[in-house]
Image (cartoon, rainbow over all chains, first blue to last red; front, side, top):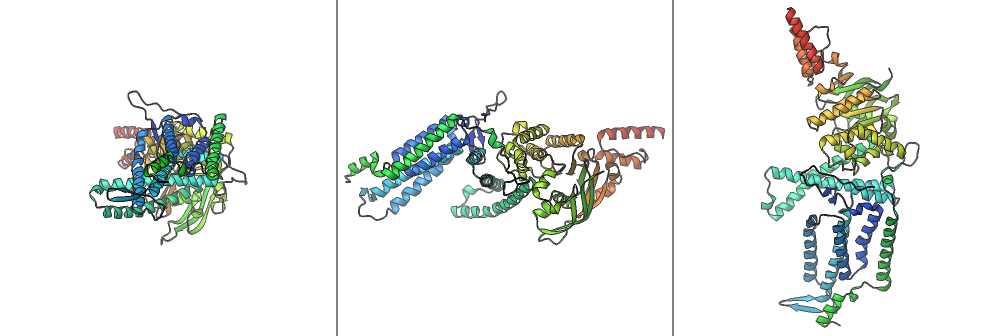
Length: 304
Length: 289
């Protein structure tokens, strides 16, 4: 599949990003030279490997690598600002919880800062978990910022996922996108009629969001009906088989070709994935006790 | 002439409703002809085409009486796969029929369902994209294109499957004048090819009338009138009572006829060229008077 580059008329700046159902992707990107299966393998690697790694330093490095890949992939990093509220609110939630409810363990080391007493072990564990979560989050951001929904479906079909399963996933992604569109439409309609949510109390805003559910669900039900009719009209059957019982062709899959570089990267990701799992669960290589930052802070606080 | 569609005493009542949406419909549509289905809103036009497509009774619950046959096969007893090969339906809201992530996937989805091989899929895809002028949209999401483009994609999806009957339900209802012209150009090409039966539900009588071989008027779940356009527009007042306005040129020529300035025996024109000829004839008659 060749990368398409759209040209804009003279005097008009060519768009660099294209909208997908779930976000934005670059119009041209070196990622597109790789088969969707390779990109899915990369996603699985970056999205799952942080689970094996307790060390915040490694997860931080993974995150930096992903930021580098986003930049290399020509993703407009400015658009990542939309994730900032999520990044901040997760941090606030996690650290607030651990400061208020640190748990009780005689081995915890109290650290007194002014009037407050913190416990080192749960705070550092939360710190490490946060970077693990961030690494996983950026793995997902990297994937959905460089892959269209179509690429995901191609990757799933290429690994022989049954057509019905990949199709249901496709419809679910579509529904999620349509749901967000409908939500935006309803909000805009309300704003057009003078509703100012900024001036509302928080409790009223919560009530308003609950009220959105009614039109959103009725629209979703109608859409489900429409999709069902559309599938019937185009001869779709749940078995994925054609008249006479044969297997259906997969035209889109034939538009993509696996190359040597794809196989090389899939093997690299696979080996690194297995190596990370074995290193952690076989030898405990990525446990918190090996964290240089942890060791430094423990020596600073005199924890044995 | 062989019949593409034969409807006999068709009655249909949707579940949880008290009134029948279709009441004793009888209609025969000859093969490779163009039928325009007109009428005010809520008179049963969409329900009728859903019966021809087989969505009723296969996908809707209700009371079904009578029969619909497509090329001699009873729709009620025919599988969705077979119906997909024979009858293509373009929905009024094109977005309602999109299920895929790109226009290209959207087009090939139906072709894969009916069991075409890759080579045939590619050929059909290229042909449909060329006929509907959507070649530059194939890589785009069907949700990110204009209303007119969406409708052309929806039509391409149906044409790609090469059905012997093409049904369009108000294909121009959501698009701008230029987009409408594109759609009628496609309809004109299909009509000129003359190798498929076309059924179009449309309020835009001005554009529909010149294309149609027959026009059918629906009112309260019944077919009130089926006739070739000349005959159909012979009584414009009757049509207005049923909520259907004849083309302006037909109304104007009808008025000329009532003034004694257009021959009673000549057919009423349906398009501008016919209207100009009628006006010339009226001037000639006026001159003689």
